[in-house]
Every structure is written in structure tokens, then in C-alpha cells.
Length: 277
Ligand code: HPA
Image 1: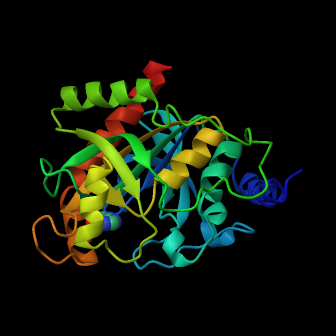
Image 2: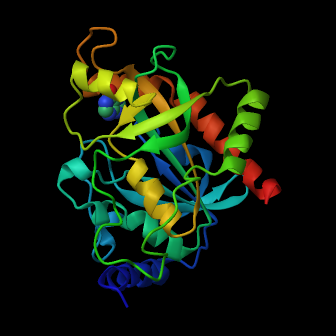
């Protein structure tokens, strides 16, 4: 058994000692979605700091815990707060929660985040569904001993974001009359925002939005055979595009302003998963 799997097994056993809830979907809440619990009936909560071997987030306002419950009738586990590479964890640690959710039973992972808009047709407050990503600027979460229990050493990444789920998001957005843009997300290490020259480079490379999470989690999930979808809230235009200086306060404010609509979109997509499968 791999060392990583062994560590995860301890976390799994702890979670199972608290609840026998079997989630079908995992949802990772990005900035602004901290109050998402109001959209679900929570049956159990497990703070990350109670889980043996688990990384604990240090970012202000990220109070880390798993919430178990139903979203529109679909059994789900929600990550309120995630850990980021810029906090000093290894990528392997950053994706531990995703892997634990796999062992707990999820088949689908829904990732959300706040991101800077690079595509000039975007504006702050837009939503962007990820169609693909660029993760070459951060280490792969799959570096190190392969966790054979999850998947192969050299996993294919042709369809990171599941085509069917993308269709479901498009259809849901149309029916709910919520505009959702589409594009390629690029992950940086953070914690600093980018320079104008970096954003010009990322635009040239084909990125539509930039952020400090998500791609690594999507890759770990794909490695483990989980179907993945992701939506960004464009909380600001990326550095150099409007000339304005960037701040975490602006990111938080836009994400908070769009939270209600974002919650409605996410909840509606997840509710349809039951009918979909
Ligand atoms: N850059 C990187 N990460 C981000 C940004 C940004 O402009 N906005 C929100 N997360």
C-alpha cells in the first residue's frame, strides 16, 4: 500500500467513525461561497483539524470543514474551505481532501473558485465554466510515489472537465437565465497576484482566467477516475488589464456580491445530477 493511501485511510476511518453518510458528489467552495450551507440540509460536519493527517487551511475567512448533506436530494460532501499551495503545503497535501472524498464515495467533483479575468470580453462578476486548464506553472499533484489504489502512473488528461457535465452546466445556465462564459483556467502558485507581463504571457498561451487553485484538484480527481466540472467567479480583471491595482478585498467583495447567483447555479446543476445519471 502506498504511504499516501495509508495516511488517507486513517482520515477515512475517522470520518466513518463520525458518519456513515455516502456522498455521490463533492463540491469545493471557493471565495464568496462560504455561506453555501444554507442551500443544503446538513446532516453532519467534520472540521479538517479533527481528521488525522489532514492539512489545515491558514487563510483568513477559510474555516475548513466537510459538510455532509443533501443538495436538491443529491447526497453530497461540501468542502467549506480548501488548502492552497501558497500556504506552504506540498501539492500532494493540497489534494488530500479530494482523494479522501473519493474514498468516501464521490463519483463527481464540482470545483468553484474566484479568478482573475484575462479574456478581455469578460468583466468582474462574470461566471466562467472551465473547458480546460493550464497547470504547467505549478508542480503536478501526482509527483511522487504513484497512488496505485487511485489510478495509473501516467494518466490521460484529454478530458479533464467532463463533456457531459459541461453540457449540463450550459443547459442549466440557460434554463436558469444565468449567463456563463467559458474558457481555459491557468493555475499559478500565488500568493502574489501576477505582473502585467505575466498576464500578457498567459493571454498569449491561451488562458482566459487565472487563479491559485482548482487545476491541481481537477488533476488528482481525474487520476482517481472522478468526473470533474468547475466554474470560476471572475472576481476582478487580471493585473494590467484595467490598470487598477488588485487586492484580496476586491476579490472577496465581488465574490460576495455574486454569491447568491453562484449558489443558485451550483445548486441547480447538482440537483439535476440525480436525473442525469
Ligand atoms: N490572480 C490570481 N488569482 C486570483 C485572481 C487574480 O487576479 N483573482 C482571484 N484569484
